Image 1: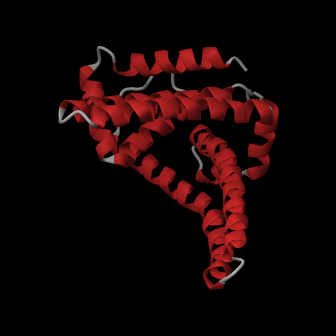
Image 2: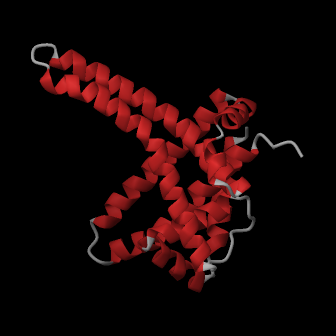
Length: 211
């Protein structure tokens, strides 16, 4: 997996989506405010469209965004279940509370990471197959990750996380600048979303599906 090439491709993809296309850029900014729209736009990117698609077909885009939210909620259920199982005993613990809290936190982190690894490929599978059920086809998802390589997959996500930290730092700095900084940030946010969606798509495509 060529991580540098993936980052470069994702940056070019995001830049091509907005640079010189001011109407689209403004519509994408509006979509981030009406967030199911930007989520629906991400679904179109996950589907493998290249170059970045135009903004439009609002009803379908909105519905796809809602589907993505539902998928996310379903994937969060295991985390909530773990929180309840370990949280209730923790609430009545006295002396061993610190140890219990540490175990609870460790379990939560492990479950959260596993859910993230599976759900990330699940939502892209949903976009590719146009079926919510495919987002939970765990056998196929695990098989696909296996083709990518678990180590390569995890490293690719870590790289995206690091880039996200850089963007987050820039966002904090811009937020400190009254009005202008927030306005710039509002226009940068869709670019980051497109970049991330494209990068995840490239991870998925690094293990091509059989014809």
